[in-house]
Image 1 (spheres, helix red, strand yellow):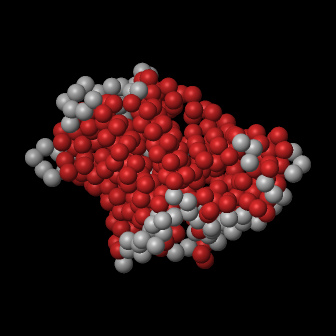
Image 2 (cartoon, one colour):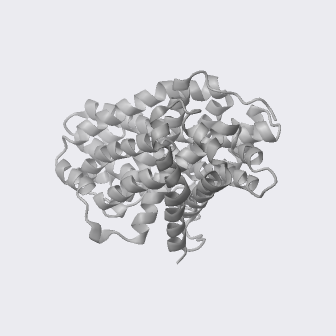
Image 3 (tube, helix red, strand yellow):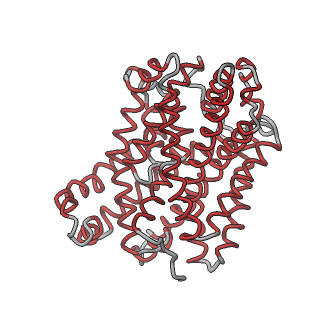
Length: 426
């Protein structure tokens, strides 16, 4: 096995972890799920799912990674020798690559809209004419496909530079910028007419609208958390930035994956009638924010596959990136074309994009999370888990809370995940 390339500092590790969590799912996926699943009731369930289930999964994954210092596959080979557990490592490598295949399609959308913002398209278009522009764009063949591949190429280029030269430098620069941009957008969004309705929708729960699908969507969204608490807080901040604008634009909050791409261009076009240059700057900053968010997620997802190929299969880093670009680019191409030429092709009643998203959220992440907490809670020696969660007993707060963490990992998270998996099958 090759020597693993490491980050240069503890802060770099934290920034990279945060970057993997604070990403596209928060700005693109979270707001439309809030709109689709009844507003604040979804937010409450999402917060609970994050704290009770996703946080224990994060702890469990951290234990496995810290104990071995290896990639996903190598870690389970080392810790699960002589058992079937090493096969879980394949799932842990496959899942991020499956996700990045369709995430890169959305990343391509953000890149296209950034180009439109730079061209000042929004201030030269009447607000009413913006209606349906997103649907017209994604229904085309070559433009969405080309932007999907361009976004993916940028991702693998950064990963190809390595951990220190690529991922670490990108995370240190872009994550603070991303946070600052979302705060600015949230502040502006709160000044729009109808903003109070958006906040009420986001924070006033109506549990009469809660269904099994609401719970599954909330859990699926919480699974995108690499650092659960920071991810949760950033998702809610993104909701504050988006939902007031949705209501100001008079757009249906449950309109689906294109919510922000329908909403914000309308806002920028409306603003452009009186403040064209401020509108143009706001549009550029917003879609630059989405692009940064998409990249911080996609980089960490691709790196999982690159680590496996370089450490376990002997690939050079550059060739590993090229190989994964071809595979994920092809799969993502199906997702991109599912809004256009392949719109009538259905698998289990879903287009490729919806299929990839549903399988990732409700199958791969759910089953993978269940197996990880079972492995750490029931296979690994408790002393090893204690050693990793408390840093050898030196973190006093973690020592005091260890039994609580261990109870969540061993009992609460598995039961919750199993119930939701069974509910999804019925």
